[in-house]
Amino acid sequence: MTKKKHLTQRQKQRIADNADKRLRQHKNKMVESVDDAAFSAPETGLIISRFGQHADVEASDGQIVRCNMRRSVSSLVTGDFVIWRRALQPTGSIDGVIDAVEPRASVLLRPDFYDGLKPVAANIDLMIIVSAILPALSLNIIDRYLVAAEMTAIKPLLVINKIDLLNTQEQQALAEKLALYKNLGYNFLMVSAQTQQDMAELLSYIQSGTSIFVGQSGVGKSSLMNSLMPGLAVQTQDVSANSGLGQHTTTVSRLYHLAEGGNLIDSPGIREFALWHLSEEEVTRGFSEFIPWLGRCKFRDCKHITDPGCAIQHAVEIGEISTERYDSYLKILASMAQDKPNHF
Ligand SMILES: Nc1nc2c(ncn2[C@@H]2O[C@H](COP(=O)(O)OP(=O)(O)O)[C@@H](O)[C@H]2O)c(=O)[nH]1
Ligand SMILES: [Mg+2]
Ligand SMILES: [Zn+2]
Image (cartoon, rainbow, N blue to C red; front, side):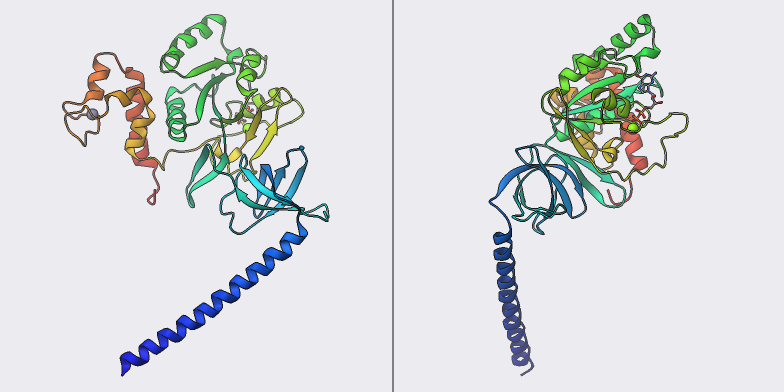
C-alpha cells in the first residue's frame, strides 16, 4: 500500500516535471523567435574585451559592437572567435548578441586562489616572457613561466628588458649565460624599452599572430607595450614605489591591433601567475629536455630527486641536462609544495 502511494507520488512528480519542461521549452522558443526578429544574420567576430555578461565584439569590418551573451555561452574571453548577430535597431549601448564561441586553438588559464582555474585569454600564438636586469634577473622565474608555456602549448619568447643597465661586456656575459635556452630551442632577445635597443627585433616576432606579455611586476611590460604602441599609454610604475606584493588589479584583458600588424593582448591578471594547478608530473614535462629521459628511471614512481637509478639525475651527471635547469626544477617542486592552496 505504501509502495503504491509512493509510486503515484513519483508519477505525479514526473508529470509535473514534464509539463514544466514543455513550458520552459516553449518559452525558450518564444524568446528565440523574438530574438531572431530583432537581430540580423549570424556573422563571425573577435572578442576584444569582456565585462561580466557583456563583451565587445569586433566585426570583420573592424567595427566594435558591445553585445550580450547568450546563457549557453559559458566561457568567453579576450581573443575568442564568436558567432554573433547585430541588433537591427542599434541603440548605441548593447547592440548585438553572442550565440556561440568557436573552438580555441589555445587558452591561457590563471589559477585563482579562490575560484580555481580561470581562462583569461584565448587563441594566443606567442607568450612573451619578460624578465629584467632590475629587479634582479632570476632564471628560476624564467623556468617557471616556461613550464606554464609548455603546458599551454603556446610558443614562448624570452625577453630580457632594461639591457641599457649593462655595459657591452656585461651584455655579452649575459648572452652566454642565456645560450642555454637557445640550445633548448627557446628564442631570447635582450632589449631596452628605454633606449629602444632591439625593439625592432621584438616587433618582428609580434607582427604576425596574437601575443601576450607575462612576467613579474616591475620588469617593464607596460613600458614595452607603450614603446610598441605609442598611442596606448599603459600606466607604468616605479619599482621602488611598488613591492610587487598584494596588488590586485581587476582591470580587464584587452586585445590591441598593432599598426605594423599582429595583435597584443594586455591582460593584467595573467602577468604574474603561479603554478599551483600543475601536478609534479606536469612540472617535470614542462622541462622539455627531460622528456626523452622520462620512463627510463629504475622506479616507476621516481621523483627524480634522490631516487636510485634515476635517468634524469644520470642525464645531469653526464651533462645532457644542465645543472642550472635541474636545480631550478628542484626549486620549483619544493616551492609548489609550500605555496599550494589546499584545494589545488
Ligand atoms: N632602465 C630601464 N628602466 C626601464 C626600462 N623599461 C622599464 N623601465 C622602468 O621599470 C619600471 C617598471 O616598468 P613597468 O613598465 O611599469 O613594469 P611592469 O610592472 O612590468 O609593467 C619603471 O620605472 C620603468 O621606467 C628599460 O628598458 N630600462
Ligand atoms: Mg605594468
Ligand atoms: Zn627519475
